[in-house]
Image (cartoon, rainbow, N blue to C red):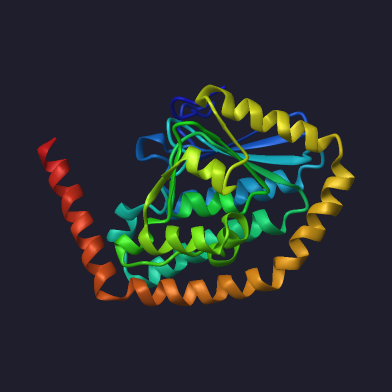
Length: 269
């Protein structure tokens, strides 16, 4: 199953985040395919609310997070960031961390069905999930350094714990883009599949976990508790670091140049 375009609500309006249920599985879909599901402030609010609703649904045993269109999530909405001041940027980072905390603190396991590119904040969302399956064409990156920014969402703890310190340092310090084959070898994802199979596979895994829900939840809590204190500290440190970076010359220049390129592109249309 693939979601090739935006999902419309019953009134014809396109929702930024769509929540639907399949038995014991709640599927949360990022739904701005025209911008590769970039995370605007309103979208982050909607995503947080959808995750909370899924967590509170009694019948839900597992949450699946995916994206509409050909990409999972391109990260923060830089068009929005370029048009806001540093204080508004801080608020957006706060929202992003709320989403991460919601996933990490949920009693229900989560699976990222990575249907395409997972970049920056998009990749960080997948790190907060328990399992990750991806399309063979998916790519992964922590490109923040190229924008004069730093990683957040506890990536400084979660990424090394998943791929190892050496690979994590390479990702966050160089900002390079990696393909699904690399991600599979590194342990960032557990499976690389044809795009049309990714969501179905994630739902099948969710149903498998749901059949063992009590044992899965207890085991997941054991694994999570060991990292909880480090994650809380990381979120606090990262919020300070990314706020400082946003106020630096490199970030200001990068975002201004990005806004200028977007404006020029719009004029040419």
